[in-house]
Image (cartoon, rainbow, N blue to C red; front, side, top):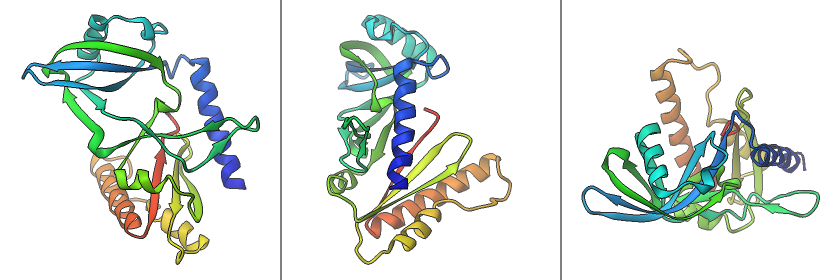
Length: 226
């Protein structure tokens, strides 16, 4: 019960912040686009764009192209955005929120210097899509089913990041799940803050995450500062 209340409060805070459009977070838009590359390839998909401009939902295709080339070097194109059934989050009113996700095979990273033109097909404000969680399609499929148990850890209290571990292994107890989930992070890491330390922590996280998947435990990382 405490877990679900904590997740509920986190999502409520993020959703309220999004809806109010706080200046430090800016506006977020989802654009369904056709992107033409200089090699004559055309991509159709969705891009997410964060901007301080409150009218980003109304901009023209050439304006979006100018912003993309001027403000960033890479663009992520999502061929398909999906929504996770679990963890289930509900407001007291009964409104149900779902985390958004994309399969790794549906994510394409392009260099903006290679973009020739962009055509906006549609635009809409972000909701839970402000963060799109990247997972293998197998994991997304598993998350359609109710987990046997769930554990949440908060590794960084400054950013309110949350890791949610969902267990689908009947041989793993709640206490074991807590221990396994906590092993994603190493306390008192040496040389904290250095680039090499950051990379080493990332490698450690990915290794443990992959090990947990083999044990039928799926990890969802929710960034609290997006």
